Length: 307
Image (cartoon, rainbow, N blue to C red; front, side, top):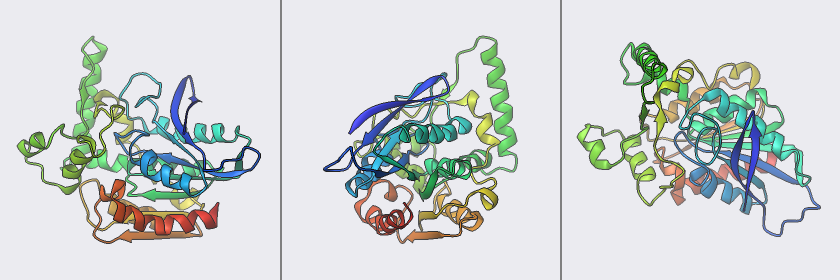
């Protein structure tokens, strides 16, 4: 594995480039871009699980930290910015096509959770990407709009963002919040019992998946763009590449089960499949051998046939 960087506008995006065993630089290889979940980083599920296994299967893989996050550049830090995250994919393709050993006609993408939503959105307008897999792909814009499921959740959020931006414009410190509770004790004190939140804390805040490049920090004043963004906008017109959607059938508050079916139904792709992994939750498909193994029973032949 090689640590590399590529440009997005005026900053650098940090990435891990993995090369297959017995790599021969004189040959041409298919390549797959692997995108991490919301709040995650390249060292977690997208890189250590999915990119690693795809590399073992003979692909060049590129797992990157989203702009403003992890080891990537961009200011201000801890920003969750959908347009920038979509542009990251285009810049990743730009980087891959400069590598003599990458076959530019065989570039695919795999995104996990929010990375799946971003991957779908990017693939609509980046047709150098020839095939896409989403694993528990989630539409971050929908999540932001629903909030606490109140009728005015999106409007209330926008009002709060506006007030915080005004405060910061007048000299207040930035509001840095968290994606999830920092401990199970905090979650219990808040009365949260949803399976996705319970397992998110277990994944991100324990040795199971914890990584310093995923610090659970989110810049609140920068969230307005996400509230007005839809990962699947124009999928019925522009998403034409082969598509594989992988979801678990244990639903949680992140909504990846229903988002997966929405993407599948809306995509214009002439060749598309959906896999429902029975008994699997959102986070089971991050790193648990059984569910991940079932996912690869579809992912492996899908990329073999379409890249």
